[in-house]
Image (cartoon, rainbow, N blue to C red):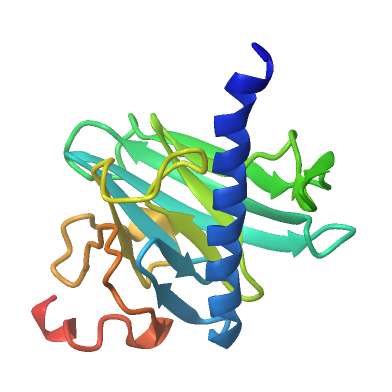
Length: 206
């Protein structure tokens, strides 16, 4: 019993995360490859476009460069690059920016519980400086959540996300007035916005 008790919360968290991730992926089937998907618990981004992350006065810029399926539909992979700026300036051109490039993935399930596939070798969280956030893949878009995959979902962690049109992290201005910063919001309706129209109502305020 001593071995079973610590495992139970982990299994429950994984089961819940699988269900929530697939919900967002299914929703993205109605999205196009050049859409931004705004959801209550995640933002879906097209490949090659920058998503900004803010926690307090610390800023991250994340850009997914590849997204592919493994040997089965369950096995999803993505490559991303991130830049972290922790000096409160939001300036990603400075030499002190911490750059990272790596792969995240869901691997082939190691075993199943109650018919639900579980893999112990997954790498589900993107990293940007000290910030780690859950990633999942849809048919067209790549999703970033407001929490790590093993955390309870909700507006508990001070995470804000802002989708952008930028394709190069060097272009980023974290204080651009056209940006809309989103927090977790259970009541927010899902919406798909073509990336080229993301700032249509704010272009004049540039």
